[in-house]
Structures are given as C-alpha cells and as structure tokens.
Image 1 (cartoon, helix red, strand yellow):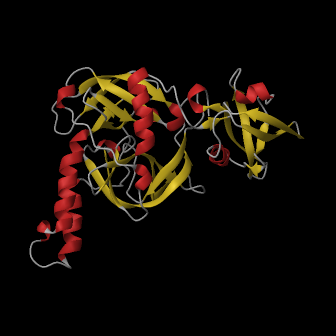
Image 2 (image 1 turned 90 degrees about the vertical axis):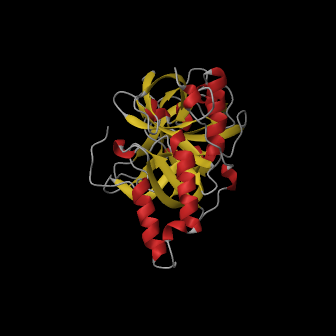
Length: 343
C-alpha cells in the first residue's frame, strides 16, 4: 500500500460537500436537491459498488466488475507477476479470493476472477469511448492510497492521446493508444478503477498520472485512462481464451527504450531485444540498433514510434531506418501484431 503523502482524494462525503458548497452560492433552497447534486449521488451509488480494491501482495490497486461470472478487469501493472489476489468490495466485511485469468501487457490490461461470491458482484455498463467529448464531466472511482470507495471529479481534457504506461518488470512499458486525458485526480491506487460519465457508463480505466519531466513527481490535473472500447475488446479475449489472440495494432515485435544523446536529447528507440522470428528480426534489425525513422517519419522516442505504428495494419510493409554502430541503414519490415509478440 502506498504511503500517505498529504494529497487527498475526494471521497463520497467530501464530494457531496464540495458540490453543495459551490452550488449553494448560486441556487436558492436546499442545494442537496439540485439536479446536478442528485445526478452525482445517483451515479456514485450506482457505480461505486462495482469498483473493487485488489490486493496483489506487494501492491494494491483497483478493478471493475466486468461480467456476472465474477470477472474483474484491471491494469496489468496492478496484478504484476502474482497469480492470486484478495478482492475487497464496497461495504464487504471480508475480502474475496481471486485468481488470474489473463494479462496483456501491451495495453496494460488484465482480468482476474473471484473464486466465490460472483453472484454478489454487479458488472458496470460500458460507454462507447469513441463518443467521448472534450469538456465532458467525468468521475474517477477507485482506491487511492488504500482509501476505499474514493471519487474525484474532472472533465475529459483531450482524446486520442498516445502515452507510455507504467513499466512492468521484464517487459517494455505498455503503450496506450487513444488514451483519454482527464483532469480528475488519478493517484496511486486509482489504477484499474473506473472513469465514469454522467450517464453512469464507464468511459475508461484510469491507469496513470503524468510525471513532471524536470522534477520527476506527479503532475496535478493530468491523468490518463484506457478507453472503454479497448478495455472491452481485450478483456473479452482474456475471458474467452486466457490470452489475446487478435489485436489490430501493428508491431515491430521488439523490446525497446528511448535512446538519448550525451546531451540528454532523445534521438531514437534503442532495440533491447527482438522477438525470434518476429517482424524486425526477419527484416534484419538487431539488438543494439537505434530506430530513428519509421515510414519516413522521425521516431525520437518510444511514444513517437508507437504513435506511428498506430497508422499501420499488421502485415503492412514499411521502411525502418536504424543507426547501427554509427552507420545508417534502412530495412523493409513486414509488420507483425501486438497479440503475437512484444510491442
């Protein structure tokens, strides 16, 4: 469980007090009975019981009830390398035992299933994340810093972001395509929870907050969520087969990190490993190469490389420029799929 650092998430009571205080200055009569107040309370009452806390031993996070079989979707970095978990539901006196169903690190998603008590879990309703609008009011529900049943408020600040997710030991960082950016506070422990619209439908799974590139700490008011359409697609495959068998995202099938010059400027993606028989390996790209361009476009960082890959389908032919021992070379790569290898 993360230590308390003086930053507070707005729980149910605090959220009610905040909105009451704001609206009370503009509305006559009882502020608790305004349409906005009633809507907030209704949504929290409806959705919050479907957002659970997950104890993975060395870490805790949040999860969302996915279906009536007891499946819970969360982040891959929440479950880590553990295979059994304790799940605490809203108002429950005792945690439920759960086991891993499947994990897909490229999209930072995983599914676990409770071994008993599934009948008491209510799945959420999912929104169409393609319809998310900038300025749309949202609530982030989860368990930051172990504070169960916490809620923060904000808006959708941007859509279509490509962001690098949390590092998972032994794997390249996840790359979240079409991420939703939100001003709702996303704190440690919120990962895997729910980003909910005022309809009560879940728009996404909060996964990380932005980090200050100079100070290294969290940046207030900038958080990111995996869009609900991606969540439903990946989670359904994990539930059905325990793994992802189909991904429409193209991949070079390498493990890489952003490379920097001696002056600290990002200048490409260093290939740490290639999947044997994978797309890059078959084309002749080797460990130690630095990928500088894909399809003629500069790729200074891992995020830029993956942002370019989004424009291609698996099986497409693309020119890849690399720097190998200070010599520039170009390869034609037949792209693979994220579901069959590293990003």
